[in-house]
Image (cartoon, rainbow, N blue to C red):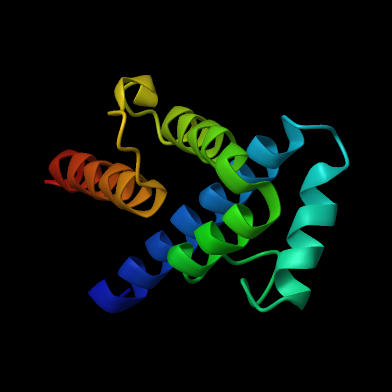
Length: 120
Protein backbone atom coordinates (compact mmCIF):
# COMPACT_ATOMS: atom_id res chain seq x y z
CA UNK A 1 0.00 0.00 0.00
CA UNK A 2 1.34 3.44 -0.94
CA UNK A 3 2.03 6.13 1.65
CA UNK A 4 -0.69 8.37 0.17
CA UNK A 5 -3.27 5.57 0.49
CA UNK A 6 -2.26 4.96 4.10
CA UNK A 7 -2.42 8.69 4.87
CA UNK A 8 -5.88 8.91 3.27
CA UNK A 9 -7.18 5.94 5.26
CA UNK A 10 -5.79 7.45 8.46
CA UNK A 11 -7.44 10.79 7.63
CA UNK A 12 -10.77 9.00 7.05
CA UNK A 13 -10.36 7.15 10.34
CA UNK A 14 -9.67 10.38 12.24
CA UNK A 15 -12.68 12.02 10.57
CA UNK A 16 -14.88 9.07 11.59
CA UNK A 17 -13.69 9.44 15.19
CA UNK A 18 -14.36 13.21 15.00
CA UNK A 19 -17.90 12.56 13.72
CA UNK A 20 -18.48 10.14 16.62
CA UNK A 21 -17.18 12.78 19.05
CA UNK A 22 -19.53 15.37 17.50
CA UNK A 23 -22.49 13.00 17.88
CA UNK A 24 -21.59 12.25 21.49
CA UNK A 25 -20.95 15.90 22.32
CA UNK A 26 -24.28 16.99 20.85
CA UNK A 27 -26.04 14.08 22.56
CA UNK A 28 -24.87 15.44 25.90
CA UNK A 29 -27.66 18.01 25.49
CA UNK A 30 -30.26 15.30 24.96
CA UNK A 31 -30.26 11.99 23.12
CA UNK A 32 -32.01 13.28 19.98
CA UNK A 33 -30.05 16.54 19.73
CA UNK A 34 -27.24 15.18 17.54
CA UNK A 35 -29.43 14.10 14.63
CA UNK A 36 -31.55 17.27 14.78
CA UNK A 37 -28.61 19.68 15.00
CA UNK A 38 -26.59 17.89 12.32
CA UNK A 39 -29.63 17.81 10.02
CA UNK A 40 -30.06 21.56 10.48
CA UNK A 41 -26.34 22.21 9.92
CA UNK A 42 -26.41 20.14 6.74
CA UNK A 43 -29.51 21.93 5.39
CA UNK A 44 -28.06 25.35 6.23
CA UNK A 45 -24.79 24.55 4.46
CA UNK A 46 -22.57 24.48 7.55
CA UNK A 47 -21.63 20.86 6.81
CA UNK A 48 -21.93 18.85 3.60
CA UNK A 49 -22.85 15.58 5.27
CA UNK A 50 -23.75 14.38 8.73
CA UNK A 51 -21.10 11.69 8.30
CA UNK A 52 -18.21 13.98 7.41
CA UNK A 53 -17.12 17.21 9.10
CA UNK A 54 -14.95 18.65 6.31
CA UNK A 55 -14.70 22.26 7.40
CA UNK A 56 -14.43 22.71 11.16
CA UNK A 57 -14.71 26.49 10.96
CA UNK A 58 -18.10 26.44 9.19
CA UNK A 59 -19.24 23.70 11.60
CA UNK A 60 -18.18 25.87 14.54
CA UNK A 61 -19.98 28.90 13.08
CA UNK A 62 -23.12 26.80 12.58
CA UNK A 63 -23.07 25.67 16.21
CA UNK A 64 -22.63 29.28 17.31
CA UNK A 65 -25.63 30.36 15.19
CA UNK A 66 -27.78 27.73 16.90
CA UNK A 67 -26.50 27.87 20.49
CA UNK A 68 -24.85 31.28 20.79
CA UNK A 69 -22.43 31.38 23.72
CA UNK A 70 -23.63 27.90 24.72
CA UNK A 71 -21.83 26.47 21.70
CA UNK A 72 -18.55 26.63 23.63
CA UNK A 73 -19.86 24.12 26.20
CA UNK A 74 -20.74 21.69 23.40
CA UNK A 75 -17.45 22.30 21.59
CA UNK A 76 -15.49 21.56 24.76
CA UNK A 77 -17.47 18.34 25.21
CA UNK A 78 -16.70 17.35 21.60
CA UNK A 79 -12.99 18.02 22.21
CA UNK A 80 -13.08 16.03 25.45
CA UNK A 81 -14.67 13.03 23.70
CA UNK A 82 -12.26 13.29 20.75
CA UNK A 83 -9.24 13.30 23.08
CA UNK A 84 -10.63 10.32 24.98
CA UNK A 85 -11.22 8.37 21.75
CA UNK A 86 -7.76 9.22 20.42
CA UNK A 87 -6.23 8.31 23.81
CA UNK A 88 -4.78 11.80 24.27
CA UNK A 89 -4.21 13.71 27.53
CA UNK A 90 -7.20 15.36 29.16
CA UNK A 91 -8.40 18.36 27.17
CA UNK A 92 -9.97 20.15 30.16
CA UNK A 93 -6.82 22.22 30.61
CA UNK A 94 -7.77 24.48 27.69
CA UNK A 95 -7.39 28.20 28.20
CA UNK A 96 -10.16 30.75 28.73
CA UNK A 97 -9.78 31.90 25.12
CA UNK A 98 -10.96 28.54 23.81
CA UNK A 99 -10.95 28.27 20.01
CA UNK A 100 -12.66 25.08 18.88
CA UNK A 101 -11.04 24.79 15.46
CA UNK A 102 -7.52 25.33 16.83
CA UNK A 103 -8.01 22.90 19.73
CA UNK A 104 -9.34 20.15 17.43
CA UNK A 105 -6.41 20.80 15.08
CA UNK A 106 -3.94 20.52 17.97
CA UNK A 107 -5.52 17.26 19.14
CA UNK A 108 -5.31 15.75 15.66
CA UNK A 109 -1.68 16.90 15.25
CA UNK A 110 -0.78 15.41 18.64
CA UNK A 111 -2.44 12.14 17.68
CA UNK A 112 -0.66 12.02 14.31
CA UNK A 113 2.70 12.80 15.95
CA UNK A 114 2.12 10.10 18.57
CA UNK A 115 1.25 7.55 15.88
CA UNK A 116 4.23 8.51 13.73
CA UNK A 117 6.54 7.81 16.67
CA UNK A 118 4.87 4.44 17.30
CA UNK A 119 5.26 3.37 13.66
CA UNK A 120 9.00 4.11 13.55
